[in-house]
Image (cartoon, rainbow, N blue to C red; front, side, top):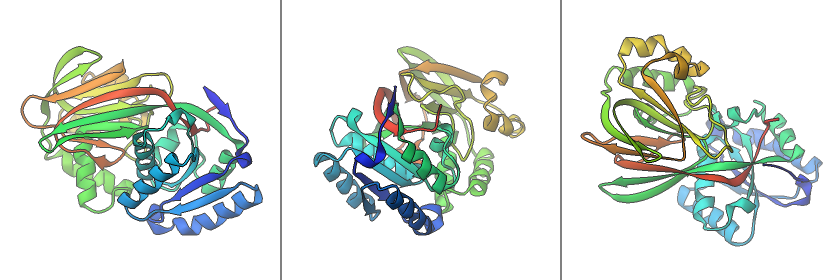
Length: 315
């Protein structure tokens, strides 16, 4: 469902991640602010502090009736915001969220045909076209207990999560070159995991290389890992890659970026699903959501269809 709104008839609460774009977001903010002022858009800006403080600000906004937001930052900033809005307990169908992408990956924005320049993204915002967007929910059961995380792009498990973890340890999770370097280093040390996967109630046993549960298509700085995912069709695209040799992975990295791996590799299976569970049978699986690590454990991923309104460039 598409919602067309007149942007300057609402006050927008803007969440600015000053660490985005290698701490250059303040430079971009000046021109963004000038565009908003010129268009007579009422707004209030919140600057990122700590995750705990930011979560409290988001909660207070939601509890005090704020329903129109802009996130200025990367995929991690957007996912953190969405997770906390959902956890606020309000009816998120009333929420409208625009994004001014300032990450280096911007994978969610890529799926929604956002322009690459922040100034052009502001123009997209001023057009006021929002889409009712699915939301994913991951429940992790680990030795530490149970935790919940929401997402609007892709949740990754197995090799994908191990790459993210290595990238974070090396200190630059947003660099494309660092991500590819971590991918190669992980590839030579990673061992597939024996996992039971329950997909909409049907049980599969895998020696799992990696899995992606996608609402949108892109992750990993431009990999089209879930090429048939549609953000508001009420289904995940779950892509399973079974155990595969190192040389075959290296030969087919390009297919991951093109999205042709789903049709061309025999080790790949794809499902349309609303619920996916990962149950480790020996070594615990590692998971991540939008580059943020989950605890090792068993995972239950469920879909909340068309729950929140997000700015889109999809025609």
